[in-house]
Image 1 (tube, rainbow, N blue to C red):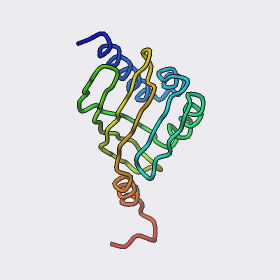
Image 2: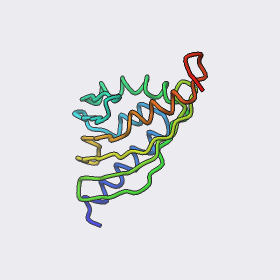
Image 3: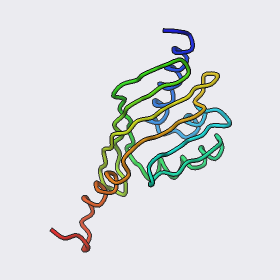
Length: 138
């Protein structure tokens, strides 16, 4: 493995470990000042900049209790990585488990760009399926 690939793997592993630790300062410390957090799902919201990302992490982490990313594989190519994952959490009390994939670009040992691919419709289905409200029919 090249030095660039090793640095990329270390940066990605540190970032995912920080996400699983639920500490927004630690998570934000893993990204560059110009970090771009890009979401492809209609339910996701992209954000630019470490400070804006750190600010938004508070509501994300509060909304997704017991958040955990389980890495299924990690493909590294120089300063880029592709990481299929299974994300599990509780959202509004509902258990959710969504498969997705992160695509990363690393610069100077920090995450510079993250693209998150996940199925927003499946997320909605799982949240609605555990809602016992009066609007549900059997």
